[in-house]
Every structure is written in C-alpha cells, then in structure tokens.
Length: 392
Ligand SMILES: *Cc1c(COP(=O)(O)O)cnc(C)c1O
Image (cartoon, rainbow, N blue to C red; front, side):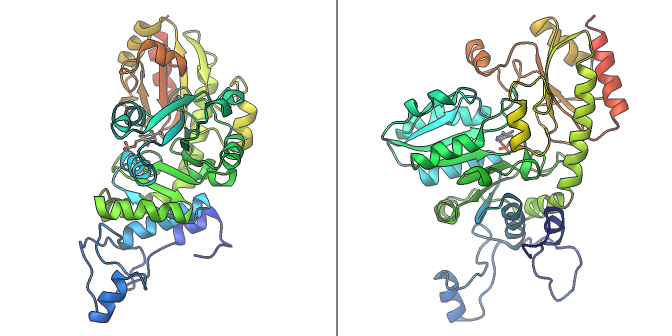
C-alpha cells in the first residue's frame, strides 16, 4: 500500500491480493501448508529466492497482512506475529539474547514479563536490572559490559508512569544497546516508539488492537536484521499467530483510529468526573494536567489512552468495596475492550509482588485501574458514581 496514504487509509486498504473470486474483504486462509508448482518452485521457495508461503508456522497470507499493517502504523521495516503478547515478548528475548547477556528494564513491566526476568531468564544466565523511568539521570550507571538490551513500557501498567522515549532512545544509541518498547497501552495510533529510536516495538494485540475482547495475539516489529533473527527463532520453535486470529486482528485494525479516539474521549470524561468525587483521593491519567509527566506525555503521545488509575478512600478495603459495588462495569483483569473493566491490581494482576515492590511502581492497595470502554459515558459514569457513593 502506498506510503502517501494516511494511517486510517492504510489500516483499511492494505490487503492480501484478491483471489479469483474478487472478494472485497480479505478471506481467512485456514490452510496449514501451500503447494509448489514444480521442483524448481520448491527449491527456490526454500532457498528464499522468492517470497512464497510454504507453511503457516512460517508465514500465512492473513498473518502477513496483519504484520504489514502494524509495520506501516509503527513506521517499522518488518515484523512477525505471535500467538500472544507474551509469546512475542519471550520470542523476541529468546531470539536475540545469549547466555551472559544483561537486560536493563524499566521497573514497572507487565506481570508475566517480570516473571520471565526473575524466574526463567536467570536459568539461562540472563540477568536483569531495573531502572526507574522517572529518574533517568541514574540510568547510565546501571549499564554493564554485558548489557545488550533496554526494555520499557510507556505508559506503564497500572501506575501510568510515562517513560521519556526520546531520552531512552538516545541512551540506547550512545551505548549501542537494542531498545525494545512494549507499546501495548498506547497503540501505534497514539505513540510511535520507532520515531524516538526504538529498535523493536512489541504489542499484545489482545488488548486495544483487537479491542473487542475476542482473541489473543502478539506482534514484534522493527529493524529488519533483528526481525530476521526473531523470524528464524519463531519459525523453528512454533509460537506463531493462527490465521483466524490474524484475520480477526487485521479487521480490528480497520477501526483502530476511530475506536481509540472514542476510548480517549470517554476516558477524558471519566477523569473529569473522578477528580470531583469525594471518595477519590488521587486520579492518574497521562493527559491530565495533574500527572507529574503531563508535558512529556503530551510531547510523545497523540492522546492519553483509555486507561485511568485512581486511588479510593479506605485503602485495600475501600478498593474491594468499590469493586463489589460496580454493576455495569466488568470485574476482569483484561483491558482495551469495548466493555469498561475495573481491576484492583493489588488483589489481582500485581498480587504476586511484595507490598514494597508494588509501592516502588506506585501501586497502592486502594489503587483501581479502569479500562474505559465504548459504552455511553453517561452509563459508565453513573455506574462509577453509585459505586463510589457507597464508600461515603
Ligand atoms: C496483556 C499484556 C501483555 C501480554 O499479552 P498477552 O496477549 O496476554 O500474552 C504484555 N504487555 C502488556 C503491557 C500487556 O498489557
């Protein structure tokens, strides 16, 4: 699809070549393998002298369409689609790191990513040091001769801290480190880490990219030489995305811009309501002037996203009472769905961290995370209001 077209147009018009049936919308290619015309075609395909699908663990028309769209959106050279976000994260690390390598990671990362760093990677002699995204002055002192990769999310889950991508990008370049950004919370519509120096960008497509709570998926895009290594690792180890999920997610991308804009509209209204409620002690949203990194968020993001975190009165018990009182909003640990979701991270997604580790990433006991959905804001706010009123 032509470079001259804009984000929304590419998201809709990028499509696998039509078949002999001239279908308007791309079909699902549920096929495990593809056939060769003759022996020469077989040889040339395996020798990678031509771009041809061989086997759906390697490539498939639906996954290729999905990956091409994400590459266009992120301004990336190439990519590979995985079965889940965690498969993308694990596959990316496993393909690029060797025994003895060192990772510098932002402290606040997704729970399972943290588990990879603390439980699994040490088995292969890969060690991780955490840095604080709000204190980058101390970052360079943490680099060792074995440091190979920098890893960060922005905004973080669920504390909504914002990492200075341009500054981290410059540090990565200066020290010749591979910068990997998990861009799941922002989506490529709101933030493009490649423009700030990221070598690779990872998404859990399960979240806003699907946006409707239906399928799991993950994707890594970025520098072609690194993606080549990731592709070879994945093609031999088998964490690939299913064609059906790729088809679903590629359709989802057609509406990403309109959905995310409406998610942001709704989140802004929820924030405006929460800051006025007497049972709420603190509200965190990257595009609210009270956010400590408001200026930075405005610089690197188009809008503030759909995740809002807030602190209720009464700590852990106050939070539980709020969670029990919601009627419309879903109690779920997922996010980025059309349905508004409330979670108390201290009880759920971050319960395995010690209270001290939680506080280091600004997760207090009474912190509530809302993934603001696409229901009418009157209904979302009425539900939050009746649940918060019950705390007074
Ligand atoms: C959900 C999530 C993941 C993991 O994705 P799955 O698709 O659930 O495997 C990774 N990073 C972030 C920031 C997430 O929110």
